[in-house]
Amino acid sequence: EALEFNELHKIYGALYFGNNYFVQCLEGTEEDVKDLFYNRIVKDPRHKNCEILSYEIIDSYLFSSWHMKYANVHNDFIEFF
Image (cartoon, rainbow, N blue to C red; front, side):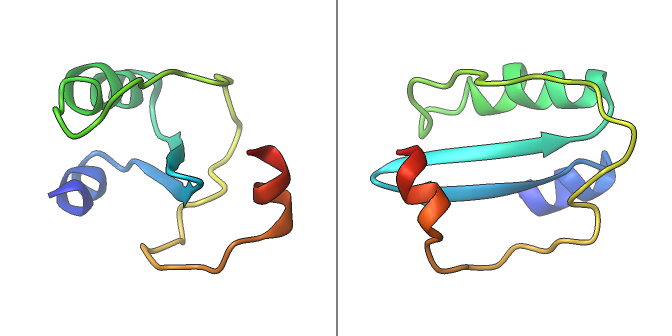
């Protein structure tokens, strides 16, 4: 469901899970990303304690060619948590 919605709205990003936390970076138009966050993610009962850690306007997408996949833990992420 998320893949279809994101593709339709040209929303890109990365999702990380570690130490029982999810951290996600979302890219897209401000309107689409805010709509996704406030009207879907926050309202989804599977999600708890959602908060925006950082917000910025970007000139180009970093994740537009990424596809969902599993990646091993990187030391920088471990240090972050």
